[in-house]
Length: 367
Ligand code: MRU
Image 1 (cartoon, rainbow, N blue to C red):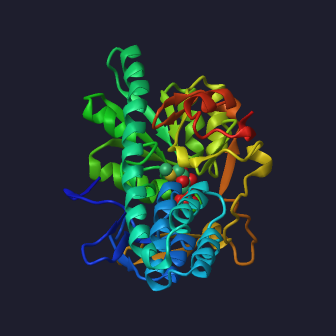
Image 2: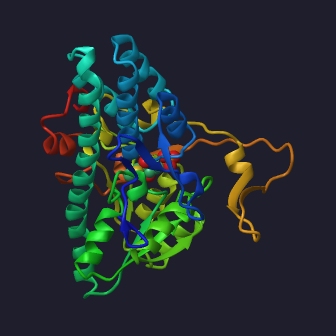
Protein backbone atom coordinates (compact mmCIF):
# COMPACT_ATOMS: atom_id res chain seq x y z
CA UNK A 1 0.00 0.00 0.00
CA UNK A 2 1.04 3.63 -0.17
CA UNK A 3 3.01 5.83 2.20
CA UNK A 4 2.70 9.47 1.18
CA UNK A 5 1.81 8.41 -2.35
CA UNK A 6 4.67 5.90 -2.79
CA UNK A 7 3.92 2.19 -2.96
CA UNK A 8 5.71 0.08 -0.35
CA UNK A 9 5.76 -3.53 0.67
CA UNK A 10 6.69 -4.38 4.27
CA UNK A 11 9.71 -6.43 3.08
CA UNK A 12 11.57 -6.40 -0.24
CA UNK A 13 14.86 -7.32 -1.90
CA UNK A 14 16.67 -4.52 -3.65
CA UNK A 15 18.24 -4.84 -7.09
CA UNK A 16 21.67 -5.12 -5.44
CA UNK A 17 20.45 -8.11 -3.44
CA UNK A 18 19.95 -6.56 0.01
CA UNK A 19 16.78 -7.45 1.94
CA UNK A 20 15.09 -4.46 3.57
CA UNK A 21 12.21 -4.03 5.98
CA UNK A 22 10.26 -1.24 7.58
CA UNK A 23 11.36 -1.26 11.24
CA UNK A 24 7.88 -1.15 12.75
CA UNK A 25 9.05 -0.30 16.27
CA UNK A 26 9.24 3.36 15.33
CA UNK A 27 5.88 3.80 13.64
CA UNK A 28 3.81 5.92 13.49
CA UNK A 29 6.30 8.60 14.44
CA UNK A 30 9.29 7.66 12.28
CA UNK A 31 9.57 5.67 9.06
CA UNK A 32 12.84 3.78 9.42
CA UNK A 33 13.96 1.32 6.75
CA UNK A 34 16.72 -1.11 7.68
CA UNK A 35 18.73 -3.79 5.89
CA UNK A 36 18.91 -7.33 7.31
CA UNK A 37 22.27 -8.83 6.37
CA UNK A 38 22.73 -12.00 8.40
CA UNK A 39 20.73 -14.80 9.98
CA UNK A 40 21.28 -13.10 13.34
CA UNK A 41 19.76 -9.88 11.96
CA UNK A 42 16.66 -11.78 10.81
CA UNK A 43 16.28 -13.57 14.15
CA UNK A 44 16.52 -10.28 16.04
CA UNK A 45 14.07 -8.54 13.70
CA UNK A 46 11.44 -11.23 14.29
CA UNK A 47 12.05 -11.76 18.02
CA UNK A 48 12.14 -8.06 18.88
CA UNK A 49 9.22 -7.25 16.60
CA UNK A 50 10.91 -4.97 14.08
CA UNK A 51 8.60 -7.01 11.87
CA UNK A 52 5.53 -8.76 13.24
CA UNK A 53 2.19 -10.18 12.08
CA UNK A 54 1.93 -13.84 11.15
CA UNK A 55 2.33 -13.63 7.34
CA UNK A 56 5.19 -11.13 7.51
CA UNK A 57 6.99 -13.22 10.13
CA UNK A 58 6.83 -16.13 7.65
CA UNK A 59 8.05 -14.04 4.70
CA UNK A 60 10.90 -12.60 6.77
CA UNK A 61 11.98 -16.07 7.88
CA UNK A 62 12.03 -17.20 4.24
CA UNK A 63 14.43 -14.40 3.34
CA UNK A 64 16.44 -15.20 6.49
CA UNK A 65 16.99 -18.72 5.18
CA UNK A 66 18.04 -17.30 1.79
CA UNK A 67 20.58 -14.90 3.31
CA UNK A 68 22.04 -17.74 5.38
CA UNK A 69 22.25 -20.00 2.30
CA UNK A 70 24.35 -17.31 0.59
CA UNK A 71 26.73 -17.44 3.58
CA UNK A 72 26.75 -21.21 4.16
CA UNK A 73 24.56 -23.52 2.06
CA UNK A 74 25.50 -26.75 3.88
CA UNK A 75 22.94 -29.25 5.23
CA UNK A 76 23.98 -28.40 8.79
CA UNK A 77 23.47 -24.69 8.17
CA UNK A 78 20.01 -25.29 6.67
CA UNK A 79 18.91 -27.39 9.64
CA UNK A 80 20.37 -24.97 12.17
CA UNK A 81 18.65 -22.01 10.47
CA UNK A 82 15.29 -23.74 10.87
CA UNK A 83 15.97 -24.02 14.63
CA UNK A 84 17.39 -20.51 15.10
CA UNK A 85 14.52 -18.78 13.31
CA UNK A 86 11.78 -21.08 14.60
CA UNK A 87 12.51 -20.26 18.24
CA UNK A 88 12.12 -16.50 17.71
CA UNK A 89 8.33 -16.39 18.20
CA UNK A 90 6.19 -19.39 19.16
CA UNK A 91 2.58 -18.62 18.23
CA UNK A 92 2.31 -17.61 14.55
CA UNK A 93 2.25 -20.85 12.55
CA UNK A 94 3.29 -19.06 9.35
CA UNK A 95 6.84 -19.09 10.75
CA UNK A 96 6.96 -22.88 10.82
CA UNK A 97 5.14 -23.06 7.49
CA UNK A 98 7.72 -20.84 5.77
CA UNK A 99 10.71 -22.67 7.30
CA UNK A 100 9.28 -26.04 6.29
CA UNK A 101 8.57 -24.75 2.79
CA UNK A 102 12.13 -23.43 2.35
CA UNK A 103 13.54 -26.71 3.63
CA UNK A 104 11.31 -28.72 1.28
CA UNK A 105 12.60 -26.74 -1.72
CA UNK A 106 16.27 -26.52 -0.69
CA UNK A 107 17.11 -29.86 0.89
CA UNK A 108 17.09 -31.92 -2.35
CA UNK A 109 19.38 -29.41 -4.11
CA UNK A 110 23.17 -29.52 -4.14
CA UNK A 111 24.47 -26.85 -1.74
CA UNK A 112 25.93 -24.77 -4.59
CA UNK A 113 22.42 -24.25 -6.02
CA UNK A 114 20.68 -23.39 -2.75
CA UNK A 115 21.19 -19.63 -2.40
CA UNK A 116 19.70 -18.80 -5.80
CA UNK A 117 16.76 -21.14 -5.29
CA UNK A 118 16.19 -19.80 -1.78
CA UNK A 119 16.00 -16.17 -2.88
CA UNK A 120 13.64 -17.18 -5.69
CA UNK A 121 11.30 -19.11 -3.34
CA UNK A 122 11.37 -16.32 -0.72
CA UNK A 123 10.35 -13.82 -3.41
CA UNK A 124 7.55 -16.17 -4.52
CA UNK A 125 6.32 -16.55 -0.93
CA UNK A 126 6.07 -12.76 -0.76
CA UNK A 127 4.23 -12.54 -4.08
CA UNK A 128 1.88 -15.37 -3.06
CA UNK A 129 1.08 -13.56 0.17
CA UNK A 130 0.17 -10.40 -1.74
CA UNK A 131 -2.14 -12.30 -4.10
CA UNK A 132 -3.67 -14.32 -1.27
CA UNK A 133 -4.49 -11.17 0.66
CA UNK A 134 -5.93 -9.53 -2.44
CA UNK A 135 -8.28 -12.51 -2.83
CA UNK A 136 -9.25 -12.35 0.86
CA UNK A 137 -10.31 -8.79 0.10
CA UNK A 138 -12.33 -9.86 -2.94
CA UNK A 139 -14.27 -12.42 -0.85
CA UNK A 140 -14.57 -10.23 2.24
CA UNK A 141 -15.90 -7.37 0.15
CA UNK A 142 -19.11 -9.37 -0.38
CA UNK A 143 -19.80 -9.36 3.37
CA UNK A 144 -19.44 -5.60 3.51
CA UNK A 145 -21.48 -5.16 0.34
CA UNK A 146 -24.34 -7.23 1.83
CA UNK A 147 -24.38 -5.18 5.02
CA UNK A 148 -24.31 -1.93 3.02
CA UNK A 149 -27.31 -3.19 1.01
CA UNK A 150 -29.17 -4.14 4.21
CA UNK A 151 -28.53 -0.61 5.48
CA UNK A 152 -29.81 0.91 2.25
CA UNK A 153 -26.35 2.15 1.31
CA UNK A 154 -25.66 3.46 4.82
CA UNK A 155 -22.22 3.46 6.38
CA UNK A 156 -20.78 0.06 7.31
CA UNK A 157 -18.89 0.11 10.61
CA UNK A 158 -16.15 -2.49 10.96
CA UNK A 159 -14.26 -3.12 14.19
CA UNK A 160 -10.77 -4.60 14.04
CA UNK A 161 -8.24 -5.64 16.67
CA UNK A 162 -4.44 -5.45 16.63
CA UNK A 163 -2.81 -4.87 13.25
CA UNK A 164 -3.84 -7.35 10.59
CA UNK A 165 -3.11 -4.72 7.98
CA UNK A 166 -0.47 -4.51 5.25
CA UNK A 167 2.29 -4.06 7.81
CA UNK A 168 1.44 -7.51 9.22
CA UNK A 169 1.64 -9.08 5.77
CA UNK A 170 3.68 -8.31 2.65
CA UNK A 171 0.87 -6.11 1.28
CA UNK A 172 -2.90 -5.49 1.53
CA UNK A 173 -3.26 -7.04 5.01
CA UNK A 174 -5.79 -9.72 5.80
CA UNK A 175 -8.51 -8.06 7.92
CA UNK A 176 -7.97 -4.75 6.12
CA UNK A 177 -8.08 -6.10 2.57
CA UNK A 178 -11.91 -6.31 2.48
CA UNK A 179 -11.99 -2.73 3.79
CA UNK A 180 -9.72 -1.45 1.01
CA UNK A 181 -11.77 -3.36 -1.56
CA UNK A 182 -14.99 -1.88 -0.15
CA UNK A 183 -13.53 1.59 -0.40
CA UNK A 184 -12.57 0.96 -4.03
CA UNK A 185 -16.12 -0.29 -4.68
CA UNK A 186 -17.48 3.03 -3.45
CA UNK A 187 -18.98 1.66 -0.22
CA UNK A 188 -19.11 4.01 2.75
CA UNK A 189 -16.99 2.12 5.28
CA UNK A 190 -15.75 3.21 8.69
CA UNK A 191 -13.29 1.37 10.91
CA UNK A 192 -13.13 1.24 14.71
CA UNK A 193 -9.49 0.53 15.50
CA UNK A 194 -8.82 -1.16 18.86
CA UNK A 195 -5.67 0.39 20.34
CA UNK A 196 -4.55 -3.16 21.33
CA UNK A 197 -2.59 -2.96 24.53
CA UNK A 198 0.08 -3.70 25.48
CA UNK A 199 2.10 -2.86 22.34
CA UNK A 200 -0.63 -0.76 20.76
CA UNK A 201 -0.40 -2.23 17.27
CA UNK A 202 -3.85 -0.76 16.55
CA UNK A 203 -2.99 2.74 17.71
CA UNK A 204 0.48 2.76 16.19
CA UNK A 205 0.15 0.68 13.02
CA UNK A 206 -3.47 0.18 11.93
CA UNK A 207 -4.39 3.82 12.56
CA UNK A 208 -1.28 4.87 10.61
CA UNK A 209 -2.26 2.63 7.69
CA UNK A 210 -5.83 3.98 7.71
CA UNK A 211 -4.53 7.56 7.75
CA UNK A 212 -2.21 6.98 4.81
CA UNK A 213 -4.93 5.31 2.76
CA UNK A 214 -7.63 7.84 3.63
CA UNK A 215 -9.91 5.34 5.40
CA UNK A 216 -12.47 6.84 7.77
CA UNK A 217 -11.64 5.52 11.25
CA UNK A 218 -11.78 6.11 14.99
CA UNK A 219 -9.18 4.82 17.38
CA UNK A 220 -10.88 3.32 20.45
CA UNK A 221 -9.60 1.86 23.71
CA UNK A 222 -9.75 -1.92 23.88
CA UNK A 223 -12.60 -1.81 26.38
CA UNK A 224 -14.93 0.31 24.21
CA UNK A 225 -15.93 -2.35 21.68
CA UNK A 226 -18.64 -3.99 23.81
CA UNK A 227 -20.28 -0.67 24.51
CA UNK A 228 -20.29 0.31 20.83
CA UNK A 229 -21.80 -3.06 19.91
CA UNK A 230 -24.57 -2.67 22.51
CA UNK A 231 -25.47 0.64 20.90
CA UNK A 232 -25.63 -0.76 17.36
CA UNK A 233 -22.50 1.08 16.25
CA UNK A 234 -20.61 -1.97 14.97
CA UNK A 235 -21.95 -3.90 11.96
CA UNK A 236 -19.10 -6.35 11.57
CA UNK A 237 -15.91 -7.46 13.30
CA UNK A 238 -12.98 -8.60 11.15
CA UNK A 239 -9.74 -9.70 12.80
CA UNK A 240 -6.63 -11.54 11.67
CA UNK A 241 -5.12 -14.67 13.18
CA UNK A 242 -1.73 -16.11 14.04
CA UNK A 243 -2.90 -19.71 13.95
CA UNK A 244 -6.28 -21.24 13.20
CA UNK A 245 -6.93 -24.89 13.89
CA UNK A 246 -8.46 -27.32 11.43
CA UNK A 247 -11.60 -27.12 13.62
CA UNK A 248 -11.80 -23.33 13.27
CA UNK A 249 -10.49 -22.19 16.67
CA UNK A 250 -8.76 -18.86 16.16
CA UNK A 251 -5.62 -17.75 17.96
CA UNK A 252 -4.99 -14.02 17.65
CA UNK A 253 -3.70 -11.05 19.61
CA UNK A 254 -4.72 -10.98 23.25
CA UNK A 255 -8.20 -9.49 23.66
CA UNK A 256 -9.64 -10.97 20.48
CA UNK A 257 -11.61 -13.52 22.53
CA UNK A 258 -13.32 -10.78 24.54
CA UNK A 259 -14.36 -9.06 21.31
CA UNK A 260 -15.82 -12.32 20.04
CA UNK A 261 -17.82 -12.74 23.28
CA UNK A 262 -19.17 -9.22 23.02
CA UNK A 263 -20.01 -9.74 19.35
CA UNK A 264 -21.90 -12.97 20.11
CA UNK A 265 -23.88 -11.27 22.89
CA UNK A 266 -24.89 -8.49 20.51
CA UNK A 267 -25.48 -10.53 17.35
CA UNK A 268 -22.65 -8.78 15.56
CA UNK A 269 -21.02 -11.02 12.90
CA UNK A 270 -17.45 -11.91 13.87
CA UNK A 271 -15.23 -12.89 10.92
CA UNK A 272 -11.59 -13.89 10.76
CA UNK A 273 -9.45 -13.20 7.69
CA UNK A 274 -6.66 -15.67 7.05
CA UNK A 275 -4.32 -16.89 4.37
CA UNK A 276 -4.19 -20.68 4.23
CA UNK A 277 -0.60 -20.93 5.61
CA UNK A 278 -2.11 -19.71 8.92
CA UNK A 279 -4.10 -22.92 9.28
CA UNK A 280 -2.45 -25.49 11.55
CA UNK A 281 -3.88 -28.80 10.37
CA UNK A 282 -2.06 -30.68 13.15
CA UNK A 283 -3.79 -29.13 16.17
CA UNK A 284 -7.13 -30.39 17.47
CA UNK A 285 -7.89 -28.19 20.47
CA UNK A 286 -6.77 -24.59 20.04
CA UNK A 287 -7.10 -23.59 23.70
CA UNK A 288 -5.15 -26.59 24.97
CA UNK A 289 -2.52 -27.00 22.27
CA UNK A 290 -1.50 -23.67 20.74
CA UNK A 291 1.60 -22.25 22.47
CA UNK A 292 0.83 -18.76 23.73
CA UNK A 293 3.79 -16.41 23.71
CA UNK A 294 4.47 -14.73 27.05
CA UNK A 295 6.34 -11.49 26.49
CA UNK A 296 8.23 -9.26 28.89
CA UNK A 297 6.53 -7.31 31.67
CA UNK A 298 7.97 -4.03 30.38
CA UNK A 299 5.36 -4.06 27.59
CA UNK A 300 2.68 -3.74 30.31
CA UNK A 301 4.47 -1.43 32.74
CA UNK A 302 5.72 0.98 30.08
CA UNK A 303 4.20 2.66 27.04
CA UNK A 304 6.07 4.04 24.05
CA UNK A 305 5.12 7.35 22.53
CA UNK A 306 6.35 10.66 21.19
CA UNK A 307 7.31 13.15 23.86
CA UNK A 308 6.45 16.86 23.48
CA UNK A 309 10.14 17.28 22.57
CA UNK A 310 9.55 15.08 19.51
CA UNK A 311 11.71 12.27 20.85
CA UNK A 312 10.14 8.79 20.76
CA UNK A 313 10.59 7.13 24.14
CA UNK A 314 9.14 4.94 26.88
CA UNK A 315 7.27 6.10 29.96
CA UNK A 316 6.52 3.97 33.01
CA UNK A 317 2.82 3.83 33.90
CA UNK A 318 2.79 1.44 36.88
CA UNK A 319 4.36 1.58 40.34
CA UNK A 320 7.96 0.47 40.82
CA UNK A 321 8.00 -3.19 41.76
CA UNK A 322 4.51 -4.23 40.56
CA UNK A 323 4.87 -7.50 38.66
CA UNK A 324 2.98 -7.96 35.37
CA UNK A 325 1.81 -10.93 33.27
CA UNK A 326 1.92 -10.58 29.50
CA UNK A 327 0.24 -13.39 27.53
CA UNK A 328 0.36 -12.02 23.98
CA UNK A 329 -2.38 -14.11 22.32
CA UNK A 330 -5.65 -15.82 23.14
CA UNK A 331 -7.85 -18.41 21.47
CA UNK A 332 -11.40 -17.72 20.32
CA UNK A 333 -13.35 -20.99 20.09
CA UNK A 334 -14.83 -21.75 16.69
CA UNK A 335 -18.41 -21.52 18.07
CA UNK A 336 -17.93 -17.73 18.37
CA UNK A 337 -16.64 -17.28 14.80
CA UNK A 338 -19.18 -16.48 12.06
CA UNK A 339 -16.83 -17.48 9.25
CA UNK A 340 -13.25 -17.66 7.98
CA UNK A 341 -12.39 -15.41 5.05
CA UNK A 342 -9.71 -17.24 3.05
CA UNK A 343 -8.18 -16.74 -0.38
CA UNK A 344 -10.56 -19.40 -1.74
CA UNK A 345 -13.75 -18.06 -0.21
CA UNK A 346 -15.53 -17.84 3.13
CA UNK A 347 -15.51 -21.11 5.06
CA UNK A 348 -17.66 -22.01 8.05
CA UNK A 349 -15.47 -22.16 11.17
CA UNK A 350 -15.54 -25.91 11.60
CA UNK A 351 -13.63 -28.99 10.46
CA UNK A 352 -15.99 -29.83 7.60
CA UNK A 353 -16.02 -26.26 6.31
CA UNK A 354 -12.24 -25.91 6.24
CA UNK A 355 -11.69 -29.38 4.83
CA UNK A 356 -14.16 -28.67 2.02
CA UNK A 357 -12.37 -25.39 1.23
CA UNK A 358 -8.90 -26.99 1.33
CA UNK A 359 -9.33 -30.67 0.40
CA UNK A 360 -5.73 -30.69 -0.86
CA UNK A 361 -4.33 -29.61 2.54
CA UNK A 362 -6.63 -31.10 5.19
CA UNK A 363 -5.07 -33.94 7.18
CA UNK A 364 -6.49 -36.51 9.55
CA UNK A 365 -6.31 -34.09 12.46
CA UNK A 366 -9.29 -32.17 11.09
CA UNK A 367 -11.65 -35.13 11.36
O1 MRU B 1 2.32 -9.74 18.16
P1 MRU B 1 1.98 -9.42 16.72
O2 MRU B 1 1.97 -7.96 16.44
O3 MRU B 1 2.87 -10.19 15.76
O4 MRU B 1 0.51 -9.95 16.54
C1 MRU B 1 -0.12 -9.82 15.30
C2 MRU B 1 -1.51 -10.30 15.30
O5 MRU B 1 -2.02 -10.80 16.28
C3 MRU B 1 -2.25 -10.23 13.99
O6 MRU B 1 -3.62 -10.01 14.21
C4 MRU B 1 -2.08 -11.57 13.27
O7 MRU B 1 -0.70 -11.86 13.13
C5 MRU B 1 -2.71 -11.58 11.94
S1 MRU B 1 -1.78 -10.57 10.81
C6 MRU B 1 -2.47 -10.63 9.28
